[in-house]
Length: 336
Image 1 (cartoon, rainbow, N blue to C red):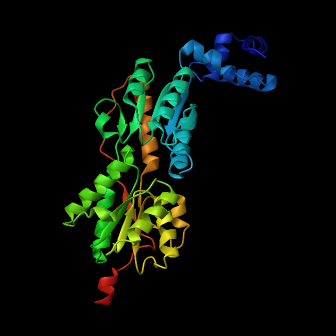
Image 2: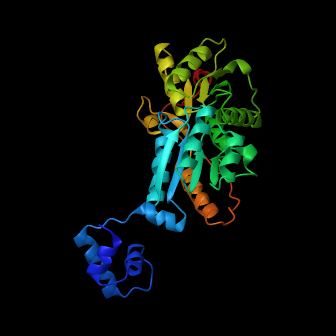
């Protein structure tokens, strides 16, 4: 079925059918109703490829994330896709598995698909491939790439604000010996979260002890191994923050295996507030990463860039502490 047959049956021009499909103004209500009825009767489905060739757009966005196995990213994808769908835009997404070379391949494939824009919501970026993508005419937006904020639209998140709230909470409970489970230092997000934690610690007048910073891998297994390292310290911290919730869950498992009760013997705080944080026992106190707002801002900036509008400067998004059941009064204060 083609548009010419629809036009003949509805007794209008093909241009009128096209305007009706695309809901352009200026069509009389009776004519619009007749065209819509004819489209339904003939089960006519417009060819989006032909339309895209005419207008020079695909109405297709690319979305790249770091790890689809981390529940943080599927939620971000869902929020971004919902916004795009409301505008009649399709989304193709992929993940890099924290691999920079894989990022390069993902971006090349998306450019070849003719996407109208790419949201690069990853921990790792490659400046050369970003430049090549923009030169090819495809706008991009990044997530929390502070060094590139002056070059590309960039959704900033103030990690330090979240860690300050977490430390305020722990200090109220009398904790001063606080450890940290960090991620691989090859990842920008892991480095920034560790730096934010250390800055918040110093702002509270607390010493940063290198032996209380343990390396994880942003996954449950890495958090488990890192917590075992911290528990072997003498003295050991009375509270531990993890750079993400998956590592915090692994840390919780390691504490249980070592017969360390959380939160009576050790307080624990994660970062991101993914769904599993409220499912583990005890439910995890964590810092909520505003991923819905990240998706909304990234989508809005792609729209503005595509429309050749200047992307406005926006304040960094603010994470906030969500208090559940893995924090309590420090053992020393309880004894006193």
